Length: 347
Image 1: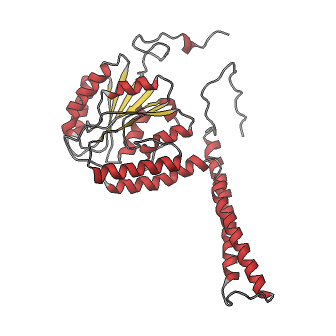
Image 2 (image 1 turned 30 degrees about the vertical axis):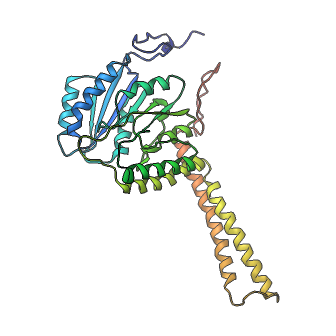
Image 3 (image 1 turned 90 degrees about the horizontal axis):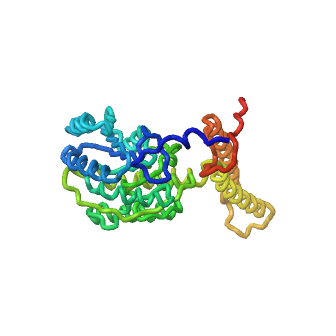
C-alpha cells in the first residue's frame, strides 16, 4: 500500500530532520496572555521575535488581550500590522489568565504550543532550550523558576507550598506549577478544557492523557514594569481547583468509586449503630442509656443509599459526556500495521 499523502508532502527546510509538517502550519505557536502590560510589550515583542528567528523553525505569535484598559491593544495591533506571523485576539472584558490561555490554545495552529507571560519575567531565550528538550521525546517540558525573583513571603513561599501539595495529590511532582513558560505538544492539548485557575495544571492533564513530562530550570527576571496580577487569594483558588483536578484524574470515568467509598463507610457506621441499639434492646445495656443510636443508624444507612444514588447518576452523566461527543476513554500514542477502524454504528 502506498504511504499516505501527508507522508510524501514536502517538508519545510527550516524544520528539524524527521519532522514532517505542512508548509502553511508553523512548528511552534507562542501564546502570550496580556492584561495591562503596555510598558513591557515593546521590549517583549522584540525579544520574542529575536529569539524565535534564531530557532530556524517556523513560528507564529499569538497575543491574547484579556480586556486591557490601557494601551496594550494598540501596541498589539501595531505588531500584527507589521508582521503576518503575529495574531491578536481581544476579549470584550477581563476573563482571567486561564481563559486567555485557553483562547490562545484554541487559535494556535503549531505542532508545539509555548505559553509565556507578557511581563518579561520569563526569558524568551529559554524557548529554544525547551523545544530542544521536547525533541528528546517528551510531550511537556515545564519551566522551573529555580532562582525566582519575587517577594519570598507573599509569592515564593505560598507557591512552594502549593507546588508540594499539587505534586502529592496528583502524583505529578514538579518544582514549579506556576511558571507559565512551557513547551507542550499540541495533540496533548486537544481535549483539555480550562476553567478557573486550571492553566497551572496543564502537566497534570497531560499526564492524564499519557504524556511524558519533564522540567528544566529557566531564567526568571524581576518585574520591571506594571504591577503583578498575582494575589494570595489565587493561591486559595488553586487549592479549590485542585479538588476538581484530583477528582478528574482519579474518577473521571468511574465516579461511582468515589461516592462508593462514602457509601460503604456510612453503611458500616449505620450497621454498628443498629447493632448497638439491638444490644440495648435485649438487655445488654452496659452502655449509657437514652442515646439516639437508632436514629443515628437510620441517618447513616439512608446517607449511604444516597451516596450510591449520587454515584449512579454521576456514572450516567459521565457516559453521556463521553458517548455524546465520541470522546475516548483512552489515548493512543502510536499505531503499527492497523487499518482504519470501521465506522461507528449509529444509535
